[in-house]
Every structure is written in structure tokens, then in C-alpha cells.
Length: 57
Image (tube, rainbow, N blue to C red; front, side):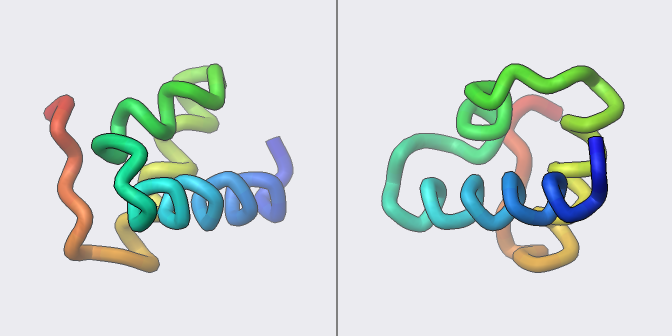
């Protein structure tokens, strides 16, 4: 997936997290991405918001 799409999905996930839609792992999983893309999205999320912690460690 292109990096601009990774950044867009990460921003959407952060917005949904801020709106209280669930924990970050469930939100990211709802986008149904492959493992590599999911890892890139999670890395982008943690870069932007290091205060968000994964629940599925």
C-alpha cells in the first residue's frame, strides 16, 4: 500500500480512537489490511501519538 494511504488510515484510526470507538487494535483491524500494511499503520500511529498503547501485544 502506498505511504500516503498508510498516513490517511493512521489519521482516521487516531480520530476514531479519540472519539471513543474502541481500542486502537480493534480500530486498525476493522480496516482488514495485510500484516505488513497493518504494521506500517501502527508505526505511523505510534509516531504521531506515542501515548496510545496497543492492547494486543
